[in-house]
Image 1 (cartoon, rainbow, N blue to C red):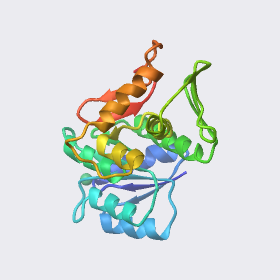
Image 2 (cartoon, protein in one colour):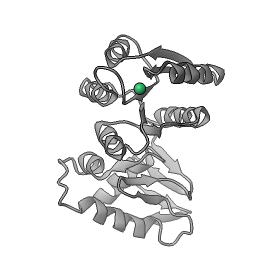
Image 3 (cartoon, rainbow, N blue to C red):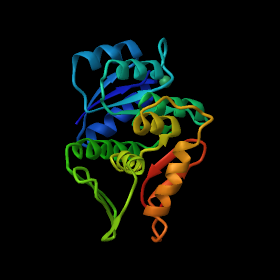
Length: 224
Ligand code: CA
């Protein structure tokens, strides 16, 4: 798994690189956004670990340009503690995950492996998480052996969430992906749909799968 690490703090960069090498990854280091753009344009990576605080152009602007160029390489952002706004902006720009500094390399490795699992899950006709199964062709949804009837939007939302378990999506991301229109902060369509989905998917089960991440959005995962 080829991982590009974009981090100007040399100590962190070499530390992460060493940990990834030991875990069997193939890491490449660079220290600026300009180098990151050049490398991602000319080479193929399986994931990018992207620090937001970089000299010159910052990580968010690199991420924005990657997505504008339709580069879908999974991106894990490194953010400062307390940087809630930049985390939300990063998720809205299409980051796959984020880690708050200081972080443990074990956790970063676990998240990189999760990214790889999600990527290799693409193209399957059945998505499964815990006891919940979605058939992407027949659109049949089953939890613990019992069929669940969903509306088109509810199904769309659930399918989007189950494709990336554990990943937190903001309301505006969900609105753009599932409803296909630009998010209006005054609307509560996403929240209303999540509530209905919860009633159908989670109500009769002790393990809840759809979770609210306060101040950020929603995620599908098992019991915390
Ligand atoms: Ca930095």
